[in-house]
Length: 526
Length: 101
Figure 1 (spheres, chains in turn cyan, orange):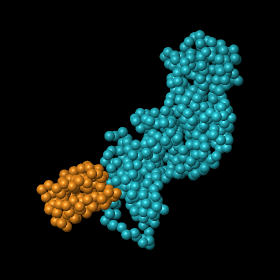
Figure 2 (cartoon, helix red, strand yellow):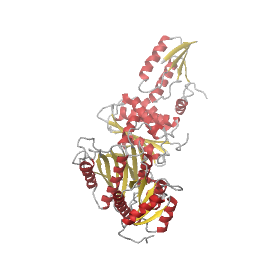
Figure 3 (cartoon, chains in turn cyan, red):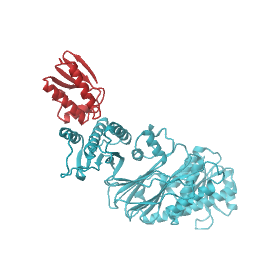
Figure 4 (tube, rainbow over the protein chains, first blue to last red):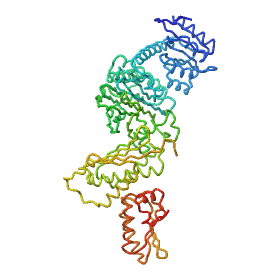
């Protein structure tokens, strides 16, 4: 066995239970001046890795089917215990399921048996590059960050997040692909102490090819971010690649495109910059659940030589959250007739990969949703008092005749976003929202179409309370303004209904905003 | 809404919710039924199918109650869903509407 000192020669572990195949690969590596250690299965490989201590292998070439521990289980172990090591999956069969599983598990390359030396060398080059990049990233992360915080709610599909010194941040990501393989990606990279880069992308198509392309883009993002490239620079690089290389073979073929949203979040300066190339709008929320929709996207990358959208910048609250999702989520929410943000909330509340109910059945596209939230660094509660939006719609002031349809949309939203809500609570919430909204239409907006009423539904971070905020841009309760003729008994009865059914009720903004709070049953309760 | 008359009791059964969007129609239909059966001594509002009653719906019931008081007739509401009964209870209307536990 070679000594594990730094070297310009690659340093590889080969794992295969077939002695002939293993020896042949070892021979091929050695003949190419590559330092190599071998193992007969996953358990044996783990022993070899542990023996290396602080100097991990640059790459591991592993078979899939092996006794005791197979290649995919080994890959999972490596992702957790040796995250800088790149893994190359060797497979004699092209079983799509296995390959796609390993792709999502973090493999960087695949090799078909029997082996081709040129393919091996190409795989080694790529694996070494990945190893180098991951090592740099890990070193930077260890210097700057406390990984435990960021990984608190992190899924294994987005392991490259960072923690900064100006805020406590959490990242939650959920993938629900319609096929085994897909082109969706969420990539996070620490840029420095206070800045992270977050990219949510969707390669058109749902096959293995798109899966490989997605993995390629993720590598490029990390590499270019490490080289201090800008979001636009990365986007232009992808655009050139798709236009000049990937789609170059047949000028009339349907081209592969990438919808990608790039977020550069600076917690020190409390600023987020968004470059949206074809993705849905990004939702930015402050800690009270006031949301702002940022940068609806221009054309996806790979369509035109120029990148249309300009970068949009917004200010961050001291605590808050950013939610972004793929087109697939937006389309499915439309099918369910609820706002995308309600579906995003429901998916994010469920533990990763546990949405086994009928809710996502029938989705026509991959669904990816990602939430980044932050608190001041001294905050002891994970999410403090952040309110999470599940509904935020604005209606013309003359919408009172549509109130039954609006109520149906609130009912659908509540049923999907808060399945733990019992019939009684849902009844009370719906009745109160209806009363408050009608009041806003009738008295706040005076039923004028030029005025508007906004209905916002928010859930606190522990899902213990639902907050309904109904606001209008009417004149409010200005004592100097003439009061419209109203039926005083009706008003008092509406307010009485709301007071009776809410946990708390208060007016603000000179009467233009009514806020109601309801207690929610614990999630999972009948 | 359906109206039926038996033994001096006029029963009005609502087909669905009592809401701001349908109370005008219901009010007209109730008054028409009361005109059709002038000998009625008691009016019963059957809420079996009314899952949601908003403030204007409650106002309709209050108006109906007042009208019966003016005409010196009896009035009671029957068969409210648990949610509607709770609402009427919170508004202290159950006793007035003849809804006993």
